[in-house]
Length: 164
Image 1 (spheres, helix red, strand yellow):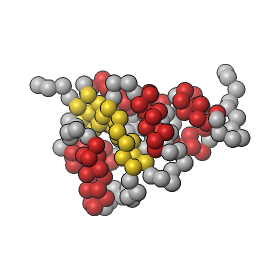
Image 2 (tube, rainbow, N blue to C red):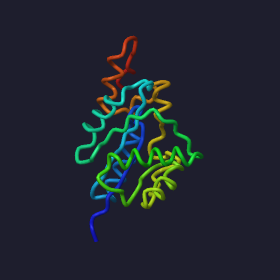
Image 3 (cartoon, rainbow, N blue to C red):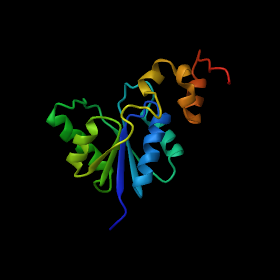
């Protein structure tokens, strides 16, 4: 049997410890792990920057960037076809495993002919979301990897939390 291939997708807006936990769990089960970052032009952190962070944070992973201005609608079969085609444009082959903490993982895996592996959907191991971080980075500072912290520290009028 060949080593398993895996896939993690996301906006990583910004990447945080929860994403890194998901990816670490995926790496335990997949010999080759692909990570696909999705971005749109209007997002508050440029996709190219997030891509560079992920490549720095994930040595040994294949990290791909899909920049598309198409809506995400889990109830729309056309949107599913669009996004699955976009994933297939960048991946060398369909993965055998799809890792996520999200309900969409079942359908994405099915459409890619893969098995879905759900990882910490209740976010017990790393209780944070990127939405929370964007709202108040200092409140979730401990969940931010160094390159993301440096980004926030370089922002005008940003005050990093005191060291504890």
